[in-house]
Image (cartoon, rainbow, N blue to C red; front, side, top):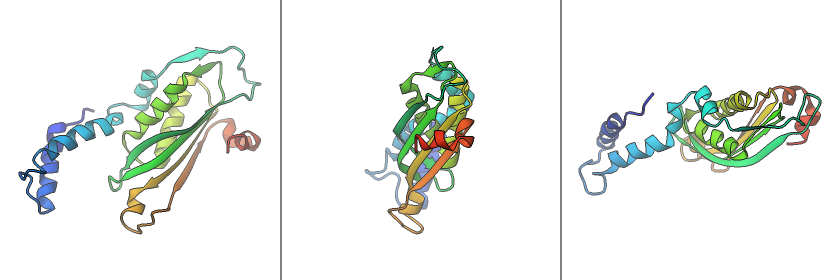
Length: 190
């Protein structure tokens, strides 16, 4: 799916009119172009499926010392991303993603974990789905079933509108493989 910048520009112009302002006044005349460019950037992940993202960041290293009997893990904590809630198009911010996995003969480049989290967040999303998508992609790349994703974030649909509770944070966890069944393993990272 390609992002249709011309349709975004037209739509933003109409939103400005619907809000009762003049899209041709000095401060707004270039706003539809700026918003279209911003949306192309912040929603880049919408152009790719989980499989395509896995293919894009599939840089692994074979590590023969990791096997089924091993409980060693890789844990990358506090990857900073942001996303937009699909319900209100509201910003999910101060978002921190932490990813753990138990290697299955392969380890992924650490920066690739952050890039996967960033690309997944660049979609109209739910926080719960971000965790599921990241876990699926990490599984595809590493061939490990043992993946955990933890996310904490503020949602402007709660902090800036509606209840306006500025201190509310949302925490989600996505557990796969041994992280679902082995509480001692899970306790090592939470």
